[in-house]
Length: 199
Image 1 (cartoon, helix red, strand yellow):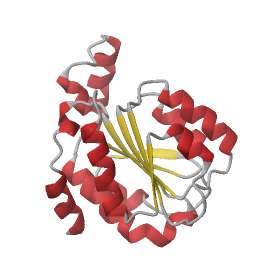
Image 2 (cartoon, one colour):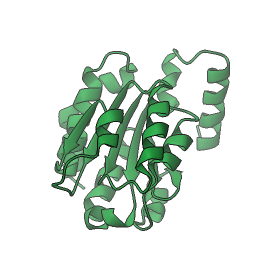
Image 3 (cartoon, one colour):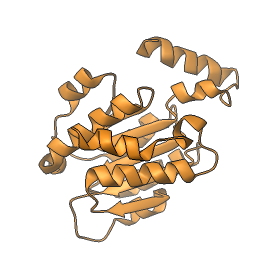
Image 4 (tube, helix red, strand yellow):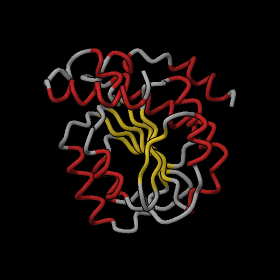
């Protein structure tokens, strides 16, 4: 099933009110969101490796990149092409885009530097109200206090983790959370950790 067919099928299921079907696993039940603003450049190598691991392990998960704008990654080749660290950080832009088809679970990787924090908070809370059941934020590269915006919209904020370890911890949280589709509740954490560390 190509990307267009998958999105069209998901749209039809949503319109028909059939989102409780197992097919929901193919409709973006898990989003892995990467802040690709200029301040994230020091972590580029590790971020790219983890993102490639997520694409391999969860081919139906959505990988979303954002800085001043947000876009979805369609393949490993697409990731390598689009994952360029530059520009500012606009959480609101990303939240609005994801709100059109909100996931059940979201892993949010950022260094917390939103250019318009008040707008980001409003849009983030709006996104949460649309059915995101689990939101795990990895706040990296900063010893300063976690911004209030992130603590208010996240179920869990993990500060300064190794990125691979942080993703693994988020997946454990998602697995334990009730209401998430079986595809992500049955994650083999140990196997995933080995895959990620091999990149």
